[in-house]
Image 1: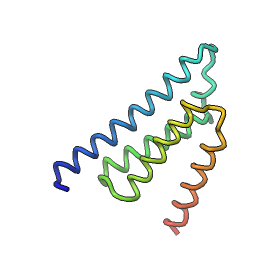
Image 2: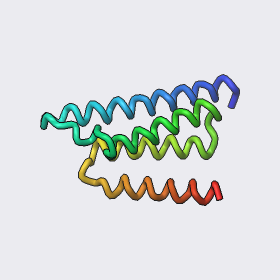
Image 3: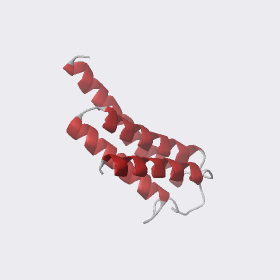
Image 4: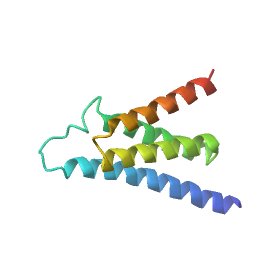
Length: 108
């Protein structure tokens, strides 16, 4: 892969992560219940948003490698779970725990 092709993939990944964040906000605001239960402090959205932001920062800083791609993929999957099956929060929690365990092990 050329450097230009890699930069295109980096841009695509970042754009997808930014879209995931916009979709999560739109999902919550479109519920029609007049509440922002997923957007508040300590919410699932806030935790996933932190992962999205961390993935974007890592990809911007390091480009795409195994670790940054995994962070981005997890953040995208968490976003999809939140916006598609909000009642399946256990899946999101499992994804978060797997990533935390892998990061903890990798960091010693």
